[in-house]
Length: 102
Image (tube, rainbow, N blue to C red; front, side, top):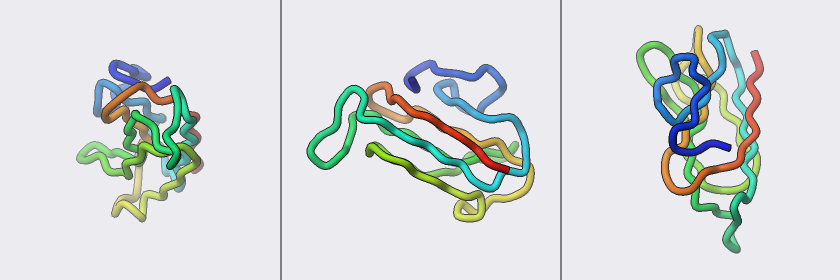
């Protein structure tokens, strides 16, 4: 569950964020469920930011929709030694599964 105050307690940029350890990652994938429910267009009330961060910036894509999303650092103008991240941005808590590949 990803919501206000969620943390992996490993130095992520935001208070309501989960992030990986540092690495040369090439893909961040997130699967967002319909928790606590979806509208007829597969939208939820919880908005998340999924992407990458380094010591200078955080970049990613926003979604409030159910389903699987993937992003590569190059799509966000990033590369090098990074952390993959997913942040709660607005609305209700989101149920997600996240994986990173490097």
